[in-house]
Structure formats: structure tokens, C-alpha cells
Length: 126
Image 1 (cartoon, rainbow, N blue to C red):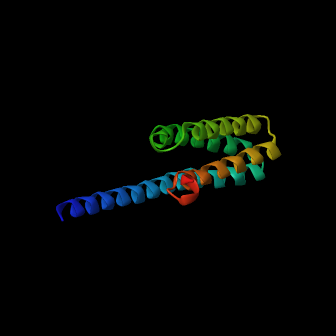
Image 2 (cartoon, rainbow, N blue to C red):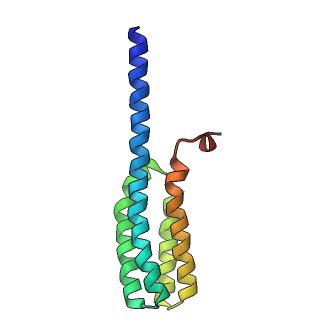
Image 3 (cartoon, rainbow, N blue to C red):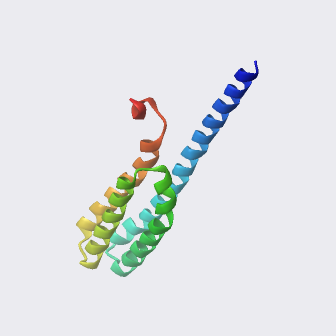
């Protein structure tokens, strides 16, 4: 009986840890996504000074969150996100709205994919 209780306790801890892990990834992804909406709006309006300042803020946010996210997620996806943000910055400096918007939407898709990619589901296991 004692072994059963210990196994049940360990299973509860694992399930609780996985739940907290999912909540953490969702929260971090939402923080990054919330920085993209004003950036998208500034780019659509071609307010380049504001867009460049928002891109700087996004890159600072990415720099802050990347080390913690790297513990839980694949480093390649984080590298891709940083590269895409750098390309968006380059397009904003060159005043290329369509290309910058495309990079912002790519960033959105990559960031939204993080929690789904790391979730413990049958799709991810098999």
C-alpha cells in the first residue's frame, strides 16, 4: 500500500509540474505576443520611428526571456525567433512595410507555436 501511495504522489507531482510548465510557456508567449500588436499597427501606419522603438523593446524582451525559455524549449526555435526579429528591424530601417509585416507575422506564428510544440500531447509524443 505504501508503494501505491508513493507512486500516486509522484504521479501527482509530475502532472502538477507539467501543468505549471504549460502555464509558464503560455504566459511567456503571451507576453511576447502582446509586444507584436503595437508593432504591427505602427508598421501598417508606416510610423517608422515608433516601429523601430517597438522593435528595440521587443528585442530587449526577447533577450530577457530567452535564457529562461531556453531551459524549457528547443534552442533552434529561439534562434529563429531572434533572427526573424533582426530581419524585421532591418526592414523597418529600410522602410519596407510589406517585408516587415511578413516578418512580424512570422514572429507571431513562431511564438504562438512554442506552447503547442512543447505541450505533452499524443501528437508530440508519437
